[in-house]
Image (cartoon, rainbow, N blue to C red; front, top):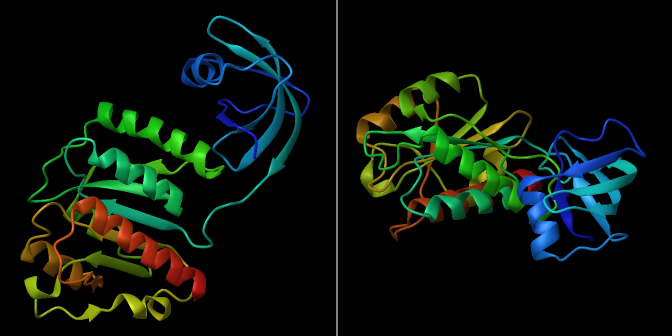
Length: 248
């Protein structure tokens, strides 16, 4: 696979020259030390990729000739939405990167009773750049959407019509809840429609938050007896469900 670069707006048609600027041009010029005549792959974040050749390298931009366009689908067969109370520091960057690699279509930052990160717009913009970088590496041609932060109770209401909704919550924290073992998720996610997963903050969802989800038809998954960090639990649950949906 040739080096991949994100192009926006996408070429309007084949055989059109495009100009890369900003971080993508910087990467080509200063990191990869690109030269005229080099072949690269461009992708538009909407499902298409383009074979292109570098024509001219400027101080801060790169002009490329687009040779051909193709639709290359590397997405999951089901839409997978991850709602998560983002962890502190740089751990949320790692979470976004791995969510992209595993095929999550949309990530929703949650505001819960125990949330420690407010997810302001500026932070979400930075995470959006992380989505591009992860997509370049893993070969996805559709960018994972990062939605605005949403309070948990609003998210529960907004997803009532989604057929498959699961939250990660330890069985010992709520013995009255009916649990789904991870190995049973293949049957639980069979059929059509989106799959929505939710992971709470450090300390987990409160009993009231879990109860509201259960009343709205959510299921619960216990990820084991060990205490997992937010990002570990999120990626473990996504990986389990992505594999289960593929096998269903």
